[in-house]
Image (tube, rainbow, N blue to C red; front, top):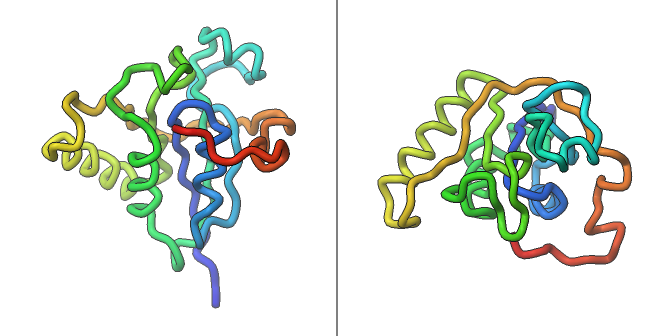
Length: 159
């Protein structure tokens, strides 16, 4: 069976738990913690200051014949609160913003439609503040951040 490999990039707060959640899905070939959306080339220390414009993100490589983008997007919206601006749990700052970085016009359309549908539902009392932006340069996070929860024997943190 041939693979139709695509990328999806999401920011939903601290990338450790986000990466672990995406890795659980059948059809995900890889999930990498990293940074996107700012300048210059980031380091964890610089991104933590909130001054670089980067968000902590997870870039997901997936087989579109086994897993569709809509399923990834549904998990993304399920794993965090998309109505809190620049905050997820105890993590505060623009580097923890809710953001979808799209890799195609089709991904952009689905992401925007999902936000409209969520806002029209009774799921949240506040409107979704998730940003939808064109994918930019993806900078993988330092090696010690990759598979962090797995390496440290931690279960999924509450997102």
